[in-house]
Image 1 (cartoon, one colour):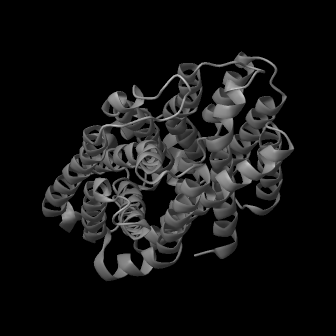
Image 2: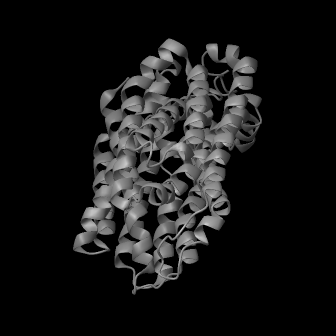
Image 3: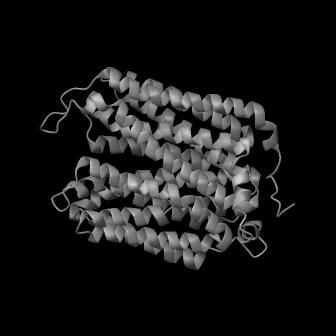
Amino acid sequence: MKRSPLLVIFVTVFIDLVGFGIVIPVLPHYAEGTKFNATPRMVAILIASYSVMQLIFSPILGRLSDRYGRRPILFFSLLGTSLGFFILGFATTLWMLFLGRIIDGSTGGNISTAQAYIADVTTPENRAKGMGLIGAAFGLGFVFGPAIGGILSQWGIGVPFFFAGALALANAVLLYFTLPETVTADHPARASAAMGRWSQLAAAIKQPRLAYVLAIYFLFVVAFSIMTTSFALFTMYRFGYDAAHNGYLFMYVGIIGALIQGGLIGRLVKMFGELPLVLAGALLFALSLFAIPFAGPQTGLSMLLLVGGTFAVGNALGTPSLQTLASRSVGRGEQGGVLGITQSVSSLARTVGPLVAAILIHSAIATYGADGRLHKMSDGSLRSTFWAAAAIMFLAFLLAAYFARAHAARYAHTEIPTPAES
């Protein structure tokens, strides 16, 4: 396994997630400021526009990488991300904010292409370790991104966007000069894409194995999105925490996830296999979500750290294993396309999760006073939100258990050859 290309891929994904993390604490304040006067609903639509664009364009970029190569698509996506952030920084009207997020979402779906690159340079046995590298970049990006955004905003609310744009541009230059292409002229992906075999990819999606993997992955991300949407509100009500406190908690979660996905996942897969890790991850995640409402001033910070660490471990075990199973469900000729669809499933889940959370905590939101401060919150709304997420994760566990029983033997073999390889 080549270290240098994987290092470039790691840096690419890390910078992409740093930029995404920078947006989280800064964009709502930026859009609601006197310069744009966006309503909370408009801010929600602005944030959702990024995920919607990724939902649409991730599989397209993935398939284009099958046809034209991973390197040009990654380079193009980084340029688009840079342009999107610079538009945000220079924006003078609300529509420019939407334009910046739409451009970034449309071109920034480079995770699927990065995953396809890893699939190109790793064996099926080592693929989970490579996918874990992306997971580690995710975790570290969420650790550093919000912190960088908060620090740089002290010099101007638009400064974090200029920094993120410059970072993406520098990354594009690095990638252009250092990343070798893996989709050569005789690569099955290029031959398949050149023949326009979209029907071949559609047939692959209809395979029961891939359908189950995508369904389980969707439930994972929905539950995770519900948790991240509701957690800050929960800690504000129960513990009186502010954004800084929550930032430390998410940093703790991100560090645990990065350590597991970046250092341990490869060894764990060799010891147990992907499917047992998905089962363990889903069960740990479900238990931690169920336990969150029991944390309170009486249990102290230790309970929060325990449940936070547990869902960090569960997510870190399950996510890269599911991505590996998706990759191994099809042959080399469909890697970019199927991983693009996997990323679209993630984008859809990141859209559905916050909407579900908003519905479940509607009664809690309604108890904010005219001064914008939280006066009271129903414990029932808290429990229902996290327990609904726990139920979703338990459903993922049941699907994974059935999947393991029905299809485990088929994953003991190497990747399924495509017609181009047969």
